[in-house]
Image (tube, rainbow, N blue to C red; front, side):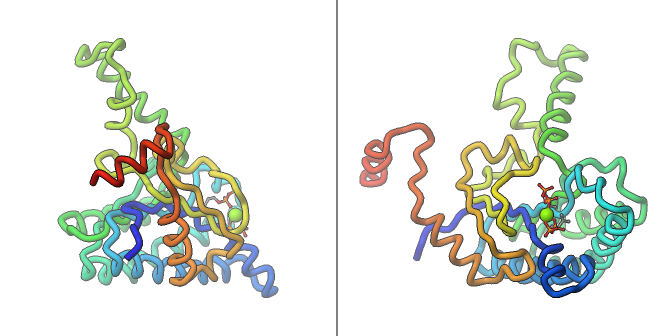
Length: 244
Ligand code: IPE
Ligand code: IPE
Ligand code: MG
């Protein structure tokens, strides 16, 4: 048995190009992407992962044509409506990360409902990043610390990486061990900037709608071959492994 990552974070990219190659509208690519997402969540449940964090919509994706943005928002609503029961049955705990102020009331209702329904589940922690940006995340954490300083509960001199980590999205979860980006681009696109500090970064040309169980297993196998040194030397890490 290979060592699995506890927490996987995925930038699900390539829906538009998948559709374009088939001479289909981009909407068809996004719909096909939902199918891929469902299967990947299933595999993560089966394999007993602790957490899966999916980039569904970035704070920059509002720059897309209005019709594509509304299509994506409708797709989030219909997918949540359809899938939340199965997720709940599979003991998945759903949580959304990202700013909520610009999310339409109807979608917000479904986000909150799925979070509440699954709040006590103890299986896979499924985090969906929607209207999420890494810059936003660090700024909101900094703002919360500033509020504590303002109220006198904290001294500025005591602000530390640990205190910021306590305020950032996904606090309390192990940081992502494995970051996957499909679609061939090798960039982070303002995803989990703070949380990815020591993640192993895996890029594949596969477009998201085509990314399946075997592709995920390939990424897991690649991950199992990494030596995670966290600043130490390879020899130190080997010694530690041999002592265990
Ligand atoms: C990712 O696929 C989905 C979202 C950003 C919502 P894209 O829509 O970015 O697909 P490409 O990059 O155009 O192929
Ligand atoms: C990142 O993909 C966001 C999501 C997958 C939701 P993009 O396709 O928007 O990223 P860029 O703009 O090409 O970097
Ligand atoms: Mg893209």
